Length: 165
Image: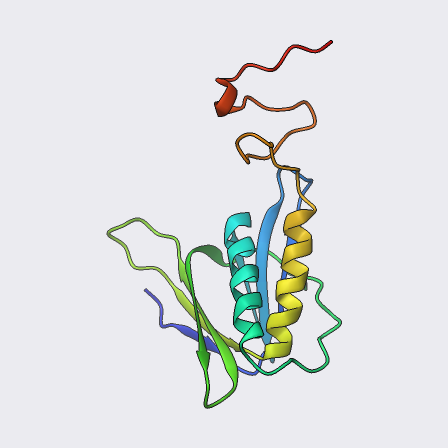
């Protein structure tokens, strides 16, 4: 395992996607000075993180002006895949602390990245993440799984579709 990467005073904290809807890859990206870190995350991780940050921000002082540049920066090739994300709030510095751990086999140790973000960066991230997640395929009203343009084999209907008239 390499030493934990600790990024503070971020110039950029964002989320983006690459690829067509239905096969999108979600990327979390942050930059501090010349250090750019891009991590691959699951859509569900992005959704939960956005929701959690939104709830956390309601308990804090209202953020100031939000960053307006939230596009992914090249190169956007992910360094590694995130297995777990942890979030805490540092009252002394008024920063939200995120810890990302690499997804590895159970008996291995992976990389760890720790980064601190402002309330403004967290708010902008949460809004952008929510829009990206909602821009995906609509969920099936029965099982919640994403629908393809041709439908899907819904486990709630045992893979059968209702008859069409």
